[in-house]
Amino acid sequence: MSKELNGFVKANPCSHILYCYHDIDSYIEKVLAFLVDGVESGETVILIESEKNLKLLVGRLKEKLTDNQFKHVHMISNFDFYLSSGSYHPPAIYEQLIKIYTPYFKGDAPFRTWTNVEWGALENPAHIVDWFEKETDKVVNEQELTLVCAYEAEKMPADMQSILEKSHPYIMTDEDLIDSALYNKIKL
Image (cartoon, rainbow, N blue to C red):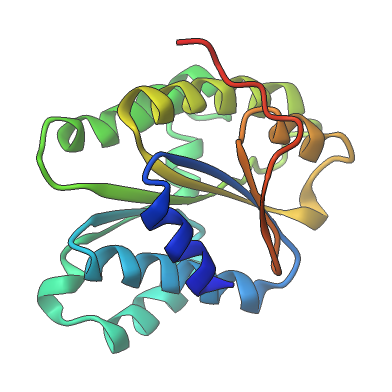
């Protein structure tokens, strides 16, 4: 599936992909393949990930990339990213996202992003995540970005996947990558 994802990204450079994962080993392999493929394709990669997974991925990336290639991987703690305002506040998170992306918008080098979305102790984040993902989809389409938004399926409220499928044109599982039947393209 990792090769299929990378082939898809090459064929569809403007991609906003929802990945609701069940298997952490499959998840790590997909992240790793996505990052390595991006660097080997001459892209900068931005990874917004949990501290636990960052530690694991750094070691695995250093096995696959040269020191010079590794410099093209920018890692951000998802805890720091999503709680940059002190709580899970979508407008603040969105501003943080734009702040991270702005230097790349002005450059010639392509880039791709993988983000592991978490919301801490927030009870039912569906409406907040929905707003944030719709705004993110606008940026993806305006700037022609490649972005994978990963969510751990077991931690998602029951209604969240269908909500997320409305703001992501592509849906990835541990085994497949398909078009979203629920996607509503955001009007720019």
